[in-house]
Length: 376
Image 1 (tube, one colour):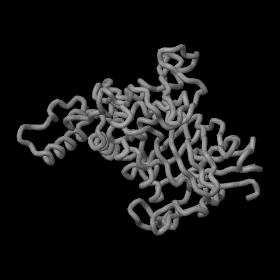
Image 2: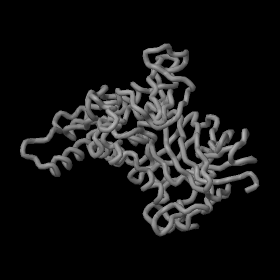
Image 3: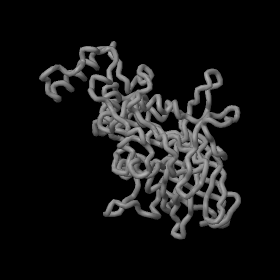
Image 4: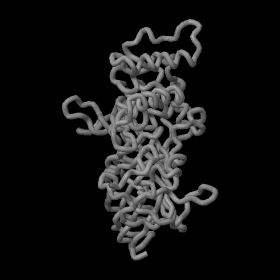
């Protein structure tokens, strides 16, 4: 309407590949996690399980001791204290993956690397494309939790509770099929997603975009034969884990989205993520905050990251060093170490009315305990 269109993201997930048992991505086997909960702690030789000690008593003693002694560090909050872990397996086979070409060339790790870039092996695409930059998949593709039945690629559950959301806008559209110049906006959603009784996102609901400039980004784009492609732009969205708030940044992000006849967008949002940022929001939660914006308690951050490692079957230091090993962008000018890794998301967005208005919750006067604050 009047050259404008709005969308709310209704499905969001990492762009990965077929399961490893299907595509043969992991001939050396799958990633393994810690074998003993005491293995995650550094400087605590007495925290191994005692003979005859049951699991419940051991875990209680382990965490009470570890968090009461400032001299004991854990590898999930301090992965640099560990070393590359051979039980953390990465994708070594050339298999088709989801995603798009981010750097405009088919890169080969042992080939000639242009100045200012990082050596890496690109993947072929699902439809025969070449040069797919998706090194995050190379890191996690041998982890059982990133297979189709795993728990690490499920965003919708938390998104649909209203914890976070993403809005997309188009402006200056003359032709929804072919238009060489449109403006594209990416915004964090300031409202919970409206759902049907079957808990399906409703099209044509109205949403307010966030007023926080950190979570607002605009760029130029073009539509050719119904495919929207954008120029690179830095975006940032919210993420919630175990009641903790984190940021999910994506630098030099490019969208390639097909526009269907019913107005739905479907495709990729891809770019580069700083390794430290990706480790924080996906594995370590080191900079997670509480509902007041303060750093979350260390017990919550550490306990969540350690618990995730055991449940999802990885080692924290293994993930950390694997991310750096396969990082494919932003080499440090002094050390040459690459500091960012290509990261791709697959998304679907349905039509919505997006307004640039401040919105508020009926509960915003409640404190963290659910008590109404005294306005005076």
